[in-house]
Length: 102
Image 1: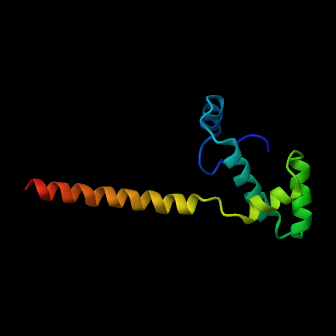
Image 2 (image 1 turned 135 degrees about the vertical axis):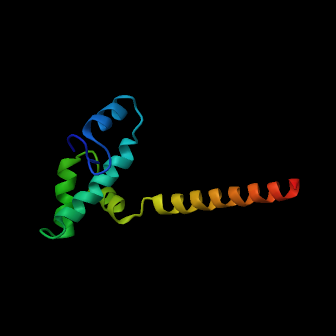
């Protein structure tokens, strides 16, 4: 993985700045990159071959771990659902507290 693997979200300059300051979660970016590469290679290779290719690119990760990363949801969906739920609860609390003042 060279350069900015999340170009569709932030510029190379911003990526380098954030990375240099330690503001990026390298593991999450790596996992995103693995999933993205898997989708890109899926039309040309069988999954077993893709796992092997990705393992060559990331030799410190075994193929089973790569498989788990690709086939496991990253939790972002549940995090966002919880975040939205918490924000909704906070808004209703504000409304309730404003009504009690009146």
